[in-house]
Image (cartoon, rainbow, N blue to C red; front, side, top):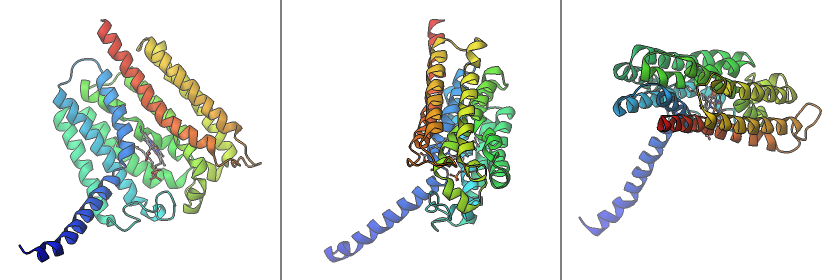
Length: 318
Ligand code: HEM
Ligand SMILES: CC(C)=CCC/C(C)=C/CC/C(C)=C/COP(=O)(O)OP(=O)(O)O
């Protein structure tokens, strides 16, 4: 090959590589990968603390199924929400509003991955796990996204159930049944979701208002939302201690839940006391709400780490 031909092709090859790379990145972004990471972690925790032994291959396929299902639901959510995502600053550059993935292709991708994830779970484990997985996709993609999100300020209180199922799915995958602990784990994620999301919605309120989405601070105001965050963190603290009162967990979990829960309540108190105008709108760049949102992510991750560590310690001592 002549030197001139090589020189001519090199920049073109670089362009093709960049384009392929960018497209792959967009398909991954459609799955909401960072959200998946925490969803999968809570699902894996349910699977690990369940009684009995699961083969590593079955465990891996179960976790992969939860990962694909969560991503599939995210892709369908982004397909349906393309009209509002384009109006909101936070979401305007997503692959569909950004014009990089056609809406029909995103829907096909989400639907295909949904079927694949449920089929994989069913083949690898049992009907109960596959059924709850299918219901979670339906709940997030249809009940939350297509119905509740645009119709009521209680959208995420009810819709939060979708994201709370993974620990139950993990447990069901391992045992073929359910029990008190996975139901309490469901309740923890369910009660965690409102303060998690409302903290963010306090500083993303303008975006939601512009898109006409009836999120709590848009409809009932920032002050009401601040109080709701506080109340939910208190209830969450109480419910996170239920496994301890029922003797389902040991001291390691109890201490973790207590310290993290008090930390989350402290964040909520800062949100309540943030310098604000008469309507509760922050005069401080929503510093406290931003901290509370970040803390919510650390809280759930560390609480489930505490549960796993406690489980490991009990197993090691027995
Ligand atoms: C219906 C319930 C939920 C709602 C409405 C909600 C809402 C949100 C929103 C709007 C964001 C910001 C995303 C962005 O900036 O692109 C976010 C971030 C996040 N959420 Fe949730 N969430 C919910 C449930 C969950 C659940 C169940 C989990 C995991 C167990 C979770 C984990 C995360 C994570 C890890 C992030 C950070 C993502 C990032 O850094 O890009 N969320 N959530
Ligand atoms: C197993 C399985 C199917 C799990 C589902 C997990 C689940 C429900 C995750 C919800 C996470 C999330 C980012 C919701 C926000 O949606 P949004 O549309 O309000 O937020 P957006 O404006 O950022 O799109």
